[in-house]
Structure formats: structure tokens, C-alpha cells
Image 1 (tube, one colour):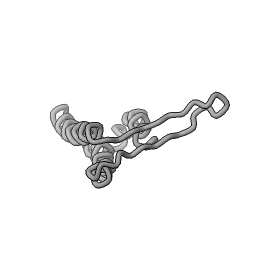
Image 2: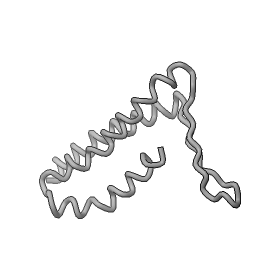
Image 3: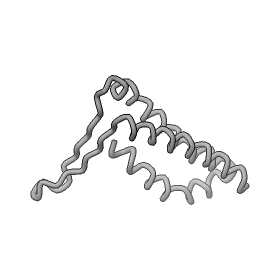
Length: 99
């Protein structure tokens, strides 16, 4: 789950370099991330549909007992799917529109 959150930041840093290399294909390449995240969140449908929310906890600062937690229930899954699905379409449309 942490990789899903951080991947957007990494891709944002790589986007100018990708444009320099692939000019016309950059939009398609950048659309892979939200599409992959959509597929990742689709994998949560079955456990959440059976009433079992998914939870991930990462120890951030062990000496202070600080943790980073992610909780996926029905509502957060719905919004995750909407955001990544529409985000994919926006990246594809925007790359064609701005060409």
C-alpha cells in the first residue's frame, strides 16, 4: 500500500525525463500508473465486499511508537476506484489535448 502512495511522487519526478525521451508516447506511459493503481484497488473488492476492511500498518519511528496506517473499507475503496479510473482517463485525454 505504501508503494501505491509513493509511486505517484516518483512518477511526477520522472515525468520530464519521460517526455524528453518519448515525446508523443509520454501520455500513454504516464497513464500506466493510475491504470495499475486501479487494478491494484480492484483486488480489494472481494474482501471488502465480504465486510472485511483491509488494514496496513507500517512502523515509521519505532522509538516514539509512531506508525503509518492505511484502512480500506467500502467507501474508501469506492473513492480509490473512482479517482484512479477517472485519473487514467484525464491523463489520456490531457496528453492528446495538449499535443
